[in-house]
View (tube, rainbow, N blue to C red):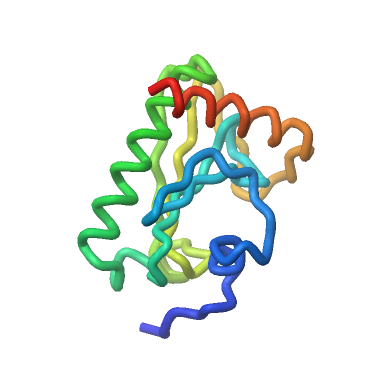
Length: 142
């Protein structure tokens, strides 16, 4: 397996070199909106540790990322009136991974509404900013 690349786009976001629409952050994880969402409120949850994917992440970091995924999922159900949540995680190119820093997709879903295709279209910045505020408020409310 190739080694972790410190210059991947998510590593740059974690270092503050690139912006994101942050919805949650603690000392071990970051959750932010996907700029090409498959549904409104589509988030990515990442460990802050340099992990390429599930094949090399430490067990404690993986467990923490999943706890954060659960926390933001519950907030998304409240904030977006979602009927369910789709969780996706891809590993290596053959598994569908495109950015090689471990990340969990958390996608709020409405019954009967299909997801957009991956990377179909970039969402407008004002829409993402409003969604991030809505989600952060729902997370803070518990």
